[in-house]
Image 1 (spheres, rainbow, N blue to C red):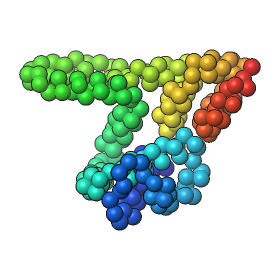
Image 2: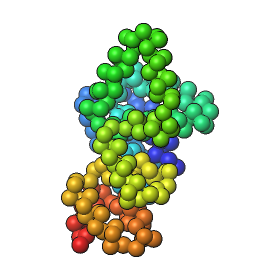
Image 3: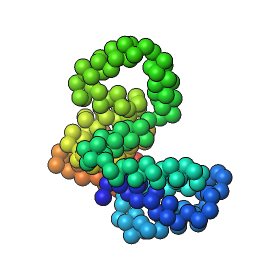
Amino acid sequence: MKVAALCVLVLLAGAASAQAPAPAGAPDAAALRQTLAPFDTLLAGLPPVLRERLELHARAWLALSPEAQARLRLDLTAWDDLAPQEKLALRERFDAWEHLDEPTRGAVLQAEARLAQMPAETRAGWRARFDALSPEQRQRYRFDPPTRAAMDLAGQLFPFVPAEEHADTLALLRALTPAQVDALRRELRRLPPNRRDAFRVRLLEQDAQGRAALLDAAP
């Protein structure tokens, strides 16, 4: 099951179990455990990267006000009514936004505000220029500079990443320090081509400390 679907399930579980407004600030450990309890078995089988991501979504749910939770439940109902292709497109846009760094998110929101104030003819001109780009060029605009750099790195090191592992591989590469990237390059050069993707999967299965240990051990 994809993480996007898991996030929806966590939010629905939280909605069902919420008996009182969430406390201000970070959710307490008991509330977080209650929200994630229906997925204990599933979580045990997920790689650390995916478990951490799912926990972040659960914390985000608990931090919402009751009114925001109610609005989100309505949004989830509308989500169920969407066609599969529309869901896929929205998941891709959501994943892209989720991986933006804060400066890029702020720049995007400022650009959106400026665009909204432009005359309709000007907005249409910008839209036409964007539509004229190739699908690959349009795709890159969804990501911040660090993620675009990670995409380039993924293309160099792991050219055949399965679609369902693409986002997590980018997150992995973004989190590496320059020294760790150098160590990864050395390790991949040492490995036969048919074993390089297995090393990528092994990195995904580790938490940050485990990945650092693997890369520090690289000759």
